[in-house]
Image 1: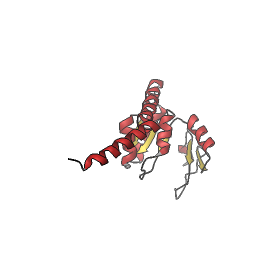
Image 2: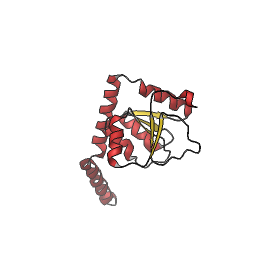
Image 3: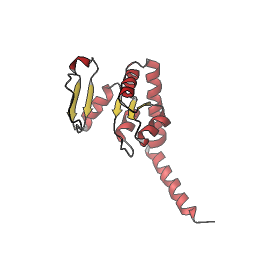
Image 4: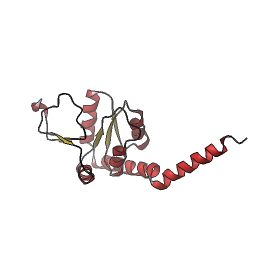
Amino acid sequence: NKSQCNGTKLVMIGKNHMDNPVECNNIIFTGFIDEAQKLAYLQHCQAVIVPSRNESLSMVTLEAMSAGKPVLVNGHCEVLRSHIEQSQAGFVYYEGEDFSQQINRILNLSSSDRQLIAQNGKSYVERNYQWKGVMEKFETAIDYVGTAGVD
């Protein structure tokens, strides 16, 4: 419904899975975009929404956190929910009304709350997904497997 649109833009990137896309001047469907465009959108957005119920890692969630952006994720996806719970760098929604409430919460964040979320996200990614940390996790797992059969 066009009358329900406000000044906030929703930019939908990737494949459009909506059967009946909403007609609203404030919803932009980009389709797939290149890395430079993605970085530009990421730099200028207020938040990143990840609606997927089926993620195994979600690079876009980690990229958003690394860029200091709040992330709103589908709570039905355990991986996404876990990222938010561990990082404290975003919010979780489950259904339509909850989604709207969380969007309003994000749009009304104070500057200090935005800064805290940004720092939480950056710290979470640095702590868990920088190359050195990833390699240390692999080494720990390999050491564990190597000593598991030894009594």
